[in-house]
Image (cartoon, rainbow over all chains, first blue to last red; front, side, top):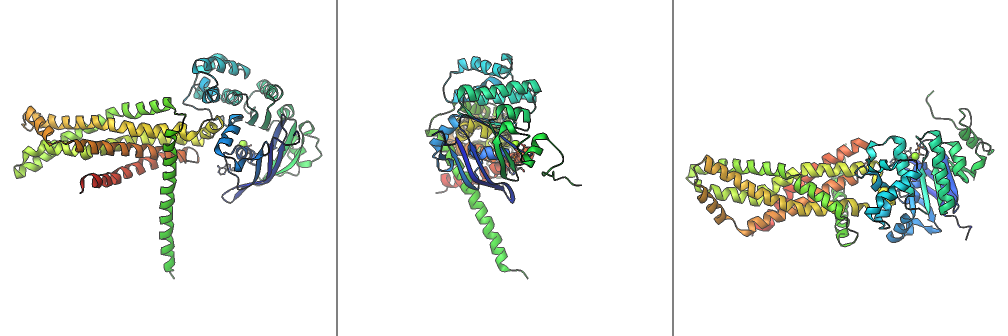
Length: 257
Length: 261
Ligand SMILES: Nc1ncnc2c1ncn2[C@@H]1O[C@H](COP(=O)(O)OP(=O)(O)OP(=O)(O)O)[C@@H](O)[C@H]1O
Ligand SMILES: [Mg+2]
C-alpha cells in the first residue's frame, strides 16, 4: 500500500488554443510527504495543480488521487476528495464580500463542523498560527497588505485540517522571518496531520525546508525529480542553474537581444 | 470568384452559434434551478440578494412608475380629446401600467441595476479565482452564487411590480385631478371598474419571468467571464444588453400568450 503514490500524473497534456502549456507531465507524489514543484515563470506549475484539483480539465492524460482516476469520478466522489483537500491560490482568492474570520472558517462552516457562534474564536486561533492578531479577523480582505492576505489564504487552506494540501507560492511576498515561520507551519501539517503537500515555490531555502521531494517543470515536461535536499547539486545542469539562480547555463531566457 | 457556399457556411456558423449560446444558457439555468430541490440552501445569500433587488431597487422603480403614470395620463387625455373620449383616460392608464409598462419598465430598470451588479460581482470572483476557491472549500459555486440570485430575482420582481402598478396609477390620478379636471373619486372608480384580475396577474407573471431573465443574464455572463477587468466590463455590458432585449422580446411572447385568443 505504501507504494501507491497519493497523487499520480501520467502524460498530462494541456494547451490553451495553440499554446501548449503541459506537454506530457509525469509526476508521483508520495503520501505524507512534501513535494515542491519548481520551474520558470509561466512554465505551467499553477496549471498543473489546477488540473489535479479538477479546476482545469486536461486535454489528455491520467490523473489519479489515491489510485483513483479523477476524470472517471462521480460528482460525489469528487466532492469527497475536495472535502479533505486544501488549496492556497497564488493570488489568495479571498472572498472580498466576507470578513477575514468568515473566510478562514468558510470550509468548516460549509461542512457544518462548527457553528457560526464558535467560528470567530476558531478563526482567531488559526490566524494566530500564521502570525496574525485576532483583530485581523474583523477586517475585510481588501484592508490587508499582500503578505497578510497570503497568510489569511494559508489559514483558510489549513483550517479544515486537509489530507492533501496544495500551495501555490505560499511564501512569496513575505519577509524572510515570516517565510520561515510559514514553512514551519507547513512542515507541521505534514508531520502532525499526516498531510501530503504539493507546493510551488521560487525560494530555494523554502523548497529545502518544506520539500522531501522536488520536481522541476520546463517546457511542459518534468525534466527532473529527486530529493529536495540535493537542490543545487543534483548533477542536472538545468536544475542546478535554476536552483542557484545563475544567468549562464543550459536554460536560456527568451529575451530579445 | 465568390463561392456561393461561403454565404451558406457563414449562415450555418451563426445558426450554430445561436444554438450553442441558447443551449449553454439553458443548461446553466437548469442547473441553477434544479439546485432549489437539492440541499443545502444558502438562505443568507438568498435573503441578501432579495433585499438587494426588492428593497434597494424601490426608489428607481417608484420614480419610473410615477412619472410614467403622469405622462400616460397627459398623453391619453390630449390624444383622446380629439375624439371626445377623454373619459377613457383612467382606463388607458391603468391597463397600460398593469399589463405592460409596470413590468417592462421596472424590469428594464432592474436589468440596469441588478444585472450589471451581479455580472460584475460574479465576473470578478471568476477572474480572481474565487469561484475555483469555492469548489475547493466544499461549496458548489452554482448553489452558492447562482441559485439564490435566480430565486431572489423571480420572487422579488413581482413585489416591485405591485408597487410600480400602484404608484403608476397614482401618478395618473395626480395629473388627472390636479391638471385635467377629473373628479378624484370618479377617476378611481373608473380605474377600478376597468381593472380585471387577469390584467394584474398577467403583469405579475411577466414580472416573475423578467426577474428570472435579468438575474440569469447577470449570473451567466459573470460566471463565464474571463480575462481580467476588461472581461468583467464586457460581461457587465452583455448582461444588461441581453437582459433588456430578452425582456422586450419575451414581453411580446407573453402578451401573445395571455391576450391573443
Ligand atoms: N486560463 C488560461 N487561458 C490561457 N492561457 C493560460 C491560462 N492559464 C494559464 N495560461 C498560460 O499557461 C502558462 C502557464 O501558466 P501558469 O499559471 O501555470 O504559470 P506558472 O508556472 O504558475 O508561473 P508563475 O510562476 O509565474 O506563477 C502561461 O504561459 C499562461 O499564459
Ligand atoms: Mg503560478
